[in-house]
Length: 384
Image 1 (tube, rainbow, N blue to C red):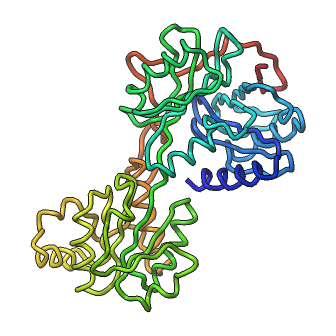
Image 2 (image 1 turned 135 degrees about the vertical axis):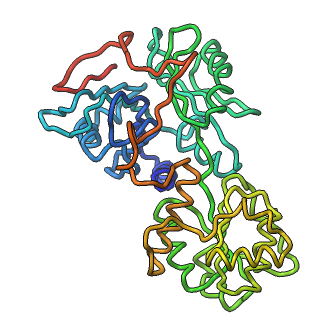
């Protein structure tokens, strides 16, 4: 999430300054890799960059190409394979396909698509052709949701095939590579969702640590409290809302399916009012700070004991947290796991791959690029 925020900030800055930009996107991975499909790296010709596609080795190769990448007139497909990279063991033991594209202000570029998702609160699919019998199609992009379709240089037949695959992709909610129905093109479908927003009811001292932790992973935060003196310290730096008789949930929760509510005023009567208000919303995540007994009592007193199934209480993962910073980490970890469908258990307790790998009937995860012209530089292959 933070990568996307930094990419957008750099993209807007570079666009204003008229700088040349390229974006590198991981479109397919076979085996193990540090980053998964959908990881992005934005490079600007003044040397600035945002995002990442590896632990540094792939970035270094792209940067070493110098002005070559900024002179691209169309997309460039790179293939990094094996656990050897220019004679150095980078330890991933996988094959990674990276598509590099020139970036402008067109609405189908990843930065523009992410901005659209943020501003509308809607989820989009960005389809990018990365292998095709017709090399002119490589790099073509289609951005679509249930209501709209925006296309770059994609042909009508590719756009139609992408539209046919849209529901299949969105039903899983996962980014993936697919071979289109006619078999002539392979497309990376990236599901772009609005960044989760954190709504904190209670502007106490520990809200500072929670906001800081949320910001570090790219989440926007807003504060709600009835105590004006508590809100005052945050004015000018954070989004704040005064909780009074005019407060309306709909005014701030424009994307409830991407909103996490945290109730932490440390005042029993206030938390009763805050929780009653939160339960009127259909926000995806509601967590309450405090003991199980305390929250159960709140639910009983507001006449909603059956709502316990909707609430995470006590909030957070069991990290043995004690300080405000550690508690904030515990809360953010649970929220991140919730929105990413993570289990929250130690990875050492998991069997098999640590990342979900898509695949199944009627689907082909792209692994071969035999239709592209390739040449070899050390252990790096690239197509032009």
